[in-house]
Length: 109
Image (cartoon, rainbow, N blue to C red; front, side, top):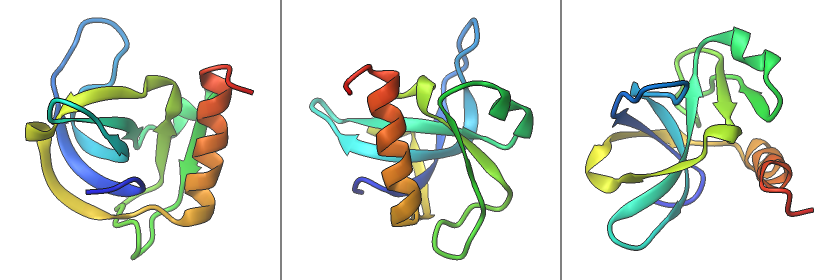
């Protein structure tokens, strides 16, 4: 697993507004202690009303089945045990756009 991979995962349900359930995620990096940093996707197009979201069109390369919204503001670490199966790889231009968005979310420049 590496940065840019899209995996199907089971994220535990949480109280509040965090994404949960079984869904595609973008792998940002492997972390210490058997965790990975991820960005969850949603198929709810209404999520585009939030800042720090990016629409991703399905393709053979990325393996997504429907238009998906990358929720960069919901970046988080999850245990590697939650990874179910690799779906594909995000297109490089979209990954670069998400990287720029992460810098805005984290106020890095």
